[in-house]
Length: 106
Image (tube, rainbow, N blue to C red; front, side, top):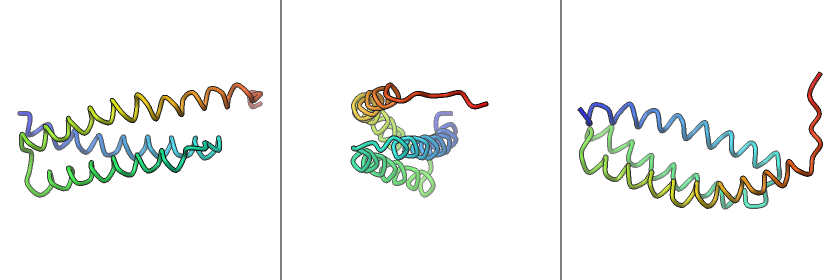
C-alpha cells in the first residue's frame, strides 16, 4: 500500500515546493533580501535532489530505498533550511515590515 501512495505524495510535494519557492522568492525580491542568492541556491539544490528522486520513481517505480531517501531529504530540509535559513528570512521580514507603514487599500 505504501508504494501506491508514494507517487501521489511525490507529485503533491513537487507542486507544493514549486509554488512555495516561487512565492518566497517574490517576497524576498520585494523586500530586497540581502541573502536572496544564497537562499535560492538552497532551493535549487533541494529541487535538484527532489527531481532526481522523482525521476527515479518514474523510471523504477516505488521502492523502499527510494522512500527512505525521500524521507531523509525531507528531514534534512526541515532540519537545515526551514529551521535555519527560513527562520533568518522570517526575522529579516519582521524587521522589514516593522519599518513600513501599511495602509489598507480602499
